[in-house]
Image 1: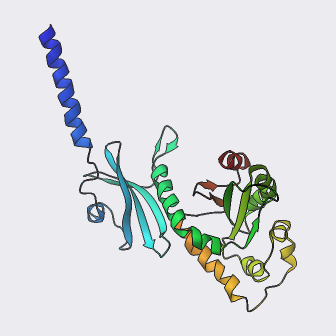
Image 2: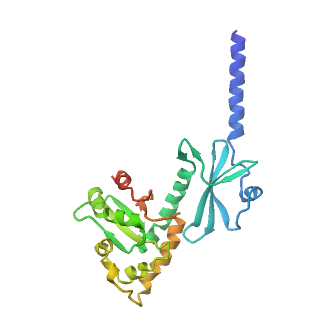
Image 3: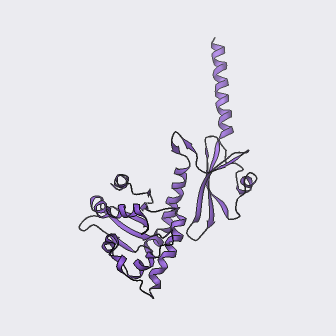
Length: 249
């Protein structure tokens, strides 16, 4: 009986070691050429990051590299026999997002100085220690943005957060020119008094922020507004006030 138990235990250990070795290097040999044997990809596509995951190689593909990062990023899962590109879910959890968020955080750190240069207005709580920064990508044609902006001062005051507003006219919003050329303040912006203003010609330095915002937003994977980033690169998507409080507090 002891000999049988020993034999079963030995087989179990060998099996664990064997299968462990089989699945320890799922990303060995996974490169762009391997992926292209399964699916057509544009020439400007690169692998940004990869790691073994659930018997597959989980990767993040980057498209159209710019000076700030990549204009597009997409998770994918690769084996010897197939490639799956897009979102996968396990127990209601979207897989691949944590790796993508890690990349966005690194990109945020790399572009933060440029991000500060395209902020068009700020709100800073008076008489409080600033504990955090919140960079808000917003658009004047976004209804959820208006809901968020109506609460930003209170959020900032309650959490000791400096709010940095960035116009992100993803729908070709001409209002951005009106706002930037007039040097609109935070109060003017959230109260919408700027709607009565006219575009001031000759203010090319301020208008240049539109192009820069679109470039940097693309590199951070901003696909809609409002999208926010804290000072350490944590991303918040949408106007969920409770979630914003929970991250900033």
